[in-house]
Image (cartoon, rainbow, N blue to C red; front, side, top):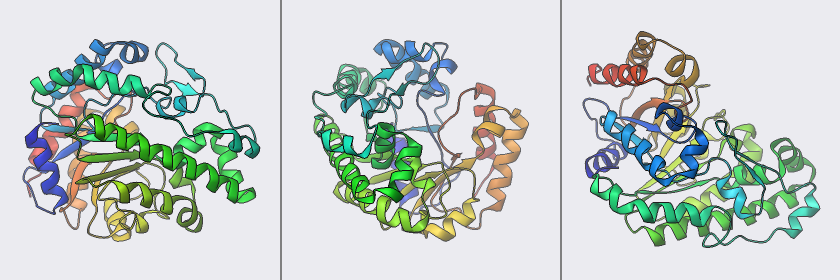
Length: 345
């Protein structure tokens, strides 16, 4: 992010009303490689292609904040790889990690990974270290430590259906697993901050919280998110969950979150009512049906309708519901940015 973008983000979090309204997107491997003219595997395997793709998007759309910005990642394989999961990287499909917990007894055999040496994590750090001079020469800084969240990592290790079932069947074992993934993520975030002193934000991505009812979220989600965000002495405490949020939203401020990117199941006014006035909302134009599959006119109309529907435009970042999906065209992103520029406070 540039200094101007960072200051804009902090102003929105403080509740300042800006004109034109600010726009932000989570940008990573589902959208960026193909948009930039390369395969997903090219993007992961070449530091130069990774850097040029990120820079191209930021140069092409300077009006938008792309969060977290120059995200060095290997898709859903990043964190599971540190536990020893086998990672599969097709040429132009999303990578995935094979589960390593076949039964709850396997949890006893897991050991805490070291983010300095284990899996793909050292490669994430080295990529950013190698390209940091060029990132800064382009006017940007590394601002965020990033990780999948504790439930997400746990579900990668044992499978989503199995994880959700064992919450009911073996809750103590699930707590044991979540204590392990939470400690690992805390260490991983701390190591990123140690390597890059410009970091003043934390982004956790955890869609699994959206599959839990209120009681289960309070037991299996809230304490671990609270621990991670509570340890994060940073200005921006960013959480992504584009699964349903009705059960979890009322507790996100208590967890320490001050920026939330949600899915499309609920209108922003409803999410605001549930989450309270203190948390900045980032969303939530439909990413697939409108931003990817719609026409530029469809995109502009959706933005205008959302703007008109808002009862309070403070602490809002215009975005899509979730990260940028595959297939979003340059023309549709321009239509989004144009429509927000036309929507004056």
